[in-house]
Length: 241
Ligand code: IMP
Image 1 (cartoon, protein in one colour):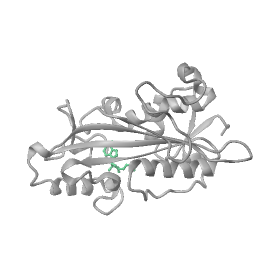
Image 2 (image 1 turned 30 degrees about the vertical axis):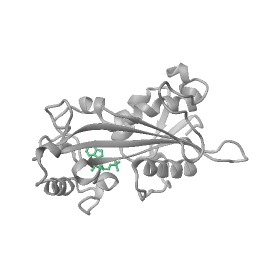
Image 3 (image 1 turned 90 degrees about the vertical axis):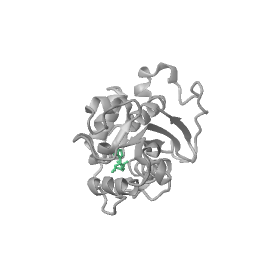
Image 4 (image 1 turned 45 degrees about the vertical axis):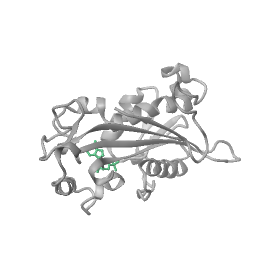
């Protein structure tokens, strides 16, 4: 992989395709299958942002290339924001979507309809490895995308994955499992987070600067957003529905 390439810290082909669609052809994007020795980074942190940064840092360190990672999940108001970062393993067995969803439905069984608010959240992080032989701190950015909605009482739809059959986005009569992939992409937390990160990726990668000419010379302050920062804390932007 050439130095002007970007690696996405995932083995999930759908995520790779989604980010490639958002970034367009000017950014050369690869996944972890190109790096057989890449570490599997456990999501041990308490927030989506820190988990995304943890994975992007590890992959940037391992590959020496700019790395993007994401972490996402469902946050239910009546459960104090849970399952949150535990979404994938809420019912214990990692990746058991049906058990996870049924446990959430059981936990809100006595919650009135008026308090079934929930949201999908995704944090996406970009980490650039230190430049030059002197090393130094990596440069980091992290952004968050959300889609607000409410839980249904019973699962509906066969598309998507995870909690999609019980999530009704605000303004929609369809659960995200009943939507086409394109319709879900357009409003999804992941789509929003990746789209928010794209200008920062373009600014950091000269090969892609023509796509975002206003960001041609490095990360800059966006209108209405906090200044991008370098170092361990990074830039944090929040995009609400
Ligand atoms: P990860 O960020 O890919 O590790 O996803 C964590 C977990 O959050 C998944 O296993 C799902 O349970 C849930 N999740 C994340 N995004 C979605 C989504 O778009 N639809 C349904 N469930 C999701």
